[in-house]
Amino acid sequence: MTKPTLVERAPLLSLTFLLVGLLLTMVGTYILSAEGLASSRGWSYWLISIGLVLLFIGVLWILKLYLTITKFQSLLQEKSKATFLKNLDRIEYMAWKLPSVYAKDLVTKKEEFNIK
Image (cartoon, rainbow, N blue to C red; front, side):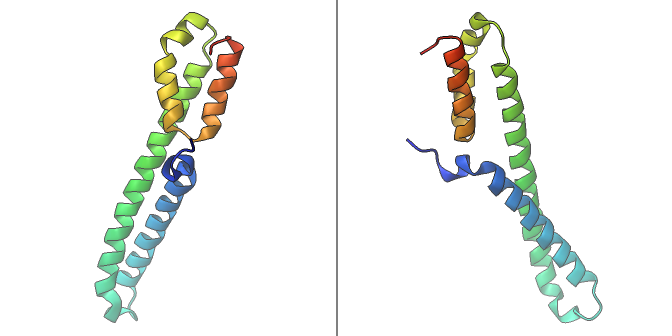
């Protein structure tokens, strides 16, 4: 079964949210401060508001993804089979929440320890 698009494309989508939010905030700020664009100032408040929301979502999404990946990688570096088996449920849950590349890493690690 394939993973949802929001999981599979999470790095790209979170970066897109971040960059679009940053761009909208910058454009809104520019319009607000520009002398010749005084008639468009009403739009600048909308652009800044939407941009800040998208920027906030993008930052949180990237941070959550980064923390999950680093925790997953640290759990996969385990040398002891007993400790790995103890944390296997947590590792499998993290692999489920991450793109399928990380699930392949988990399969490789399970083969290394001869776990089905």
